[in-house]
Amino acid sequence: MHRKPFLPSKPCLRCGRPFTWRKKWARDWDHVKYCSERCRREPVKA
Image (tube, rainbow, N blue to C red; front, side):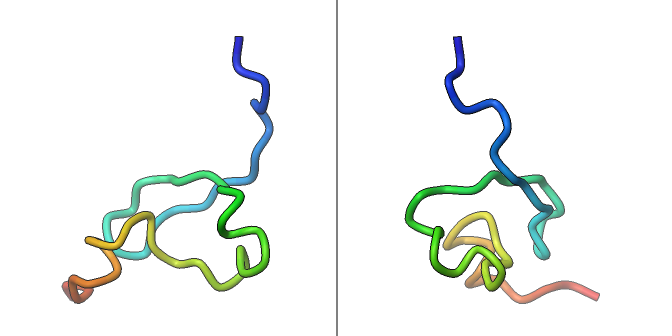
């Protein structure tokens, strides 16, 4: 059984996949745009 089923999520700006809130992002959740370091490093393709 999953103990935290209602965590907020949002889509990654790079790949479009949804990612959920993590404790390390607690202070800047509003500023988190990418799901991973890899997506953050790669430029957005137009």
